[in-house]
Image (cartoon, rainbow, N blue to C red):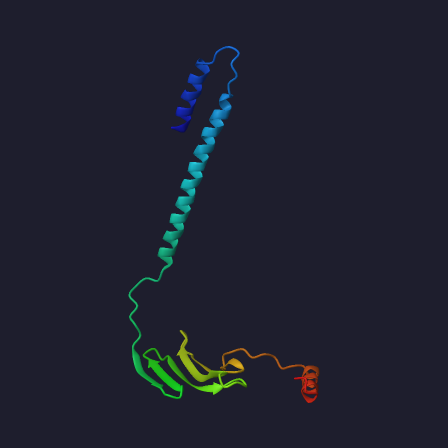
Length: 171
């Protein structure tokens, strides 16, 4: 459609040209029309690609009716002194336990924080039960579990250097 309209427009312009009159070359007009057509084509392609991406996301979404996992037991306790504890167990074997209390973590009375400890366990798809025990206190979050990686031992010279720094009161 663009090429037919632009070609007839160029033809009419050529017929109306008088001798000695300066006129833009018809190739320039055609070039502008083609640029417009390319912009429309690029926009259509972009819309198509975006629609295709949304379709891919929709197809990749989990399908089927997943039933909620039943909670077998659940306990929760909050005390006036700021201590708490809770635990629950679900039908799929997941277990969670946590307890905590308020502790002064700094020199000022207002430097109070919560110190917590707990554990959670779950069953992997291949039937292995994994348990993580953890503590969150003024030293940060520390998790332990047989399946978690552990750092390699420190070299002897580093252990000696740390001991020397501690003895000198620098650590």
